[in-house]
Structure formats: C-alpha cells, structure tokens
Length: 167
Image 1 (tube, rainbow, N blue to C red):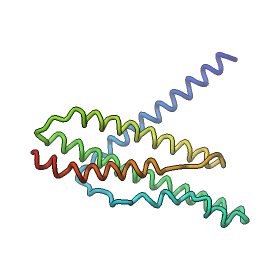
Image 2 (image 1 turned 90 degrees about the vertical axis):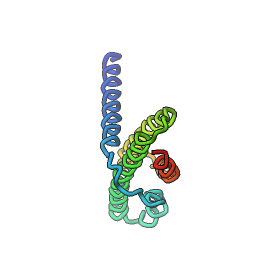
Image 3 (image 1 turned 180 degrees about the vertical axis):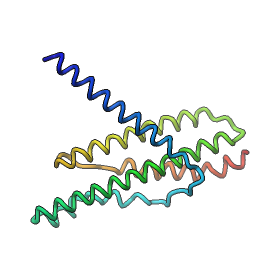
C-alpha cells in the first residue's frame, strides 16, 4: 500500500512538473516584442466572469445555470490564454530593451526571471482551480494575475523610454 501511494505521489508530482515546464515554455515562446502593449484594464472583466451573483440569478433553472457556468469558464480560459500571450510579449519587450541598453542590470534580469516563474505558477494554480470548479469544487480568484499583468504593463511603460534613451 505504501509503495502504491509513493508511486501515485511520484506520478502526480511528475505531471505537475511537466505542466509547469510546458507553461513556462509557452510564456517564453510568446516573445513577439513588436506587438503593442495591452490596453490598461484589458483583463478586468475576468474578475466578474464567475460572479456568484450572476449564477444565483439563474440558480432555479439547472440547465441554464450549467450552460452559464460552462460559457463563463470557456471565456475565462480564453482570457487566460490571451493574458499569457500578452505577459510573454511584455516580458520579451523588457528583455529586448535590456539587451539593447548600454546599462548592465543583472538585478532586473533576476527579478524578471523570478516574476516569470511566479506568473507561471499562478497560471497553473488557476488552471487547476478551473478543473476543480467544473466539478463544483471551490472558487476561482484571478485578481492576483490581473493585478500582476497590470503592474508589469505599468513597469514597461515606465522603463521603455528610459532603456531606449540609454541605447
């Protein structure tokens, strides 16, 4: 029994590591720095998609309630994909500006690497919560992720002119 539990833990850990790795590679693949910055507040609607108030309005009609939850989850996943692409573009833009700059900033490079790992972990956590939510377990809070991309966008807006001037 202990062997089975150990094997199960090993398999689940491997699957989680693989998922985290593929997400990390996906973010790195979105390196299209020539794309424009995402609009400020673009992802704010994600915060309301799974609002309990909307679900409660149709709670008496089970079929409609299920359809609404399914549609909202689909929209949330679409938003999450776009958010991940935009994050990758913002990160690539910062990296390109750093490379083109005459100023060496290893502290900024370290901060970007840490930020990328935290972002990927947050996306994975939301994906797992979406999976659980499909079965009626738990809730999904995307506010941290939305705030993180807004903060990164603000940093790009601030740093981009300074780094271009240093070229």
